[in-house]
Image (cartoon, rainbow, N blue to C red; front, side):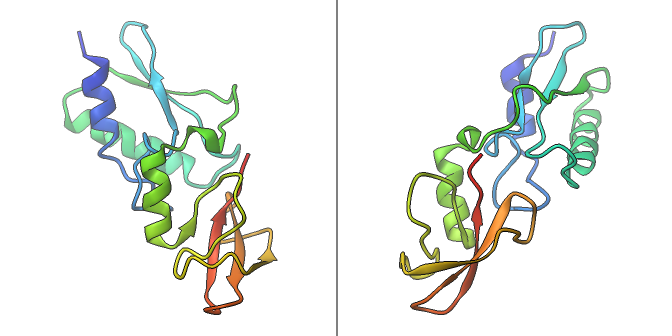
Length: 148
């Protein structure tokens, strides 16, 4: 029998392909391990139709196979829908350091200089889950993770 903690630790080695400073567990994509025989890794994409979903599934499959867990399945679960509430607090700080304003009930702030003197440039950022902002003080553009 495979220990679910060991499987989650293995999944935490997989970095998000669009935001390579956080792993898929920290991002909340990995929802857990079901109790079927053999078990399944339960994942929920950040958006239905997210272009990284297939790549993430392939990365999980490769990681499981390399660890000798070829019998473990991968199950996409769309309900409940993914929410930014599932992003860990540790990942919030990693996002900020990487240059992305993390989601939350705060005024958008520049991850480079910390200023809240910012403006929304576009609801569409570098990925569907982010919006493009700009700092009016240091003049740097930055992505902000959309809350949902």
